[in-house]
Length: 139
Image (cartoon, rainbow, N blue to C red; front, side, top):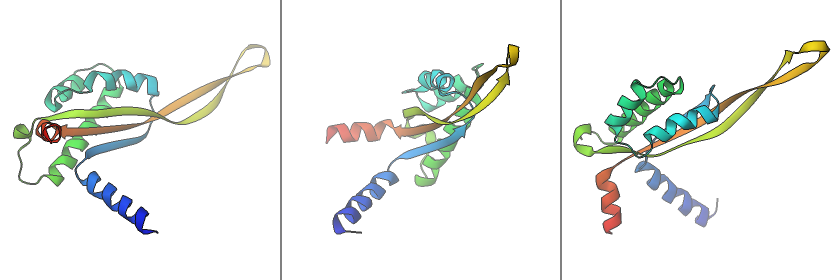
């Protein structure tokens, strides 16, 4: 590895230490349905987002709630000794990407077959503190 690549990799590692995220891979829900739930919690305070997900009727909300709790846990590991209530955490970014598609065949009338696509997705959730966002804007 050259010096330039090593320097860029080191900078990325330092930047990743300041990011608190959780990733859910190969979730067996269609990306379209997951994006509907993800849009409801984007930019919302963490406590409010947990309430929204807990009382939502959508199936995808249970998986997103668990993912958000994982992101909060990752934040706690990196910020030992800091209270969550004092940190003003919010959902900074959440995006849903398409994952593998399982292709199945369903019998149809007159000897034909219809193709069924069972879609899945990847979800990435990033949380941040309001103070850190304000600090970076003041610089």
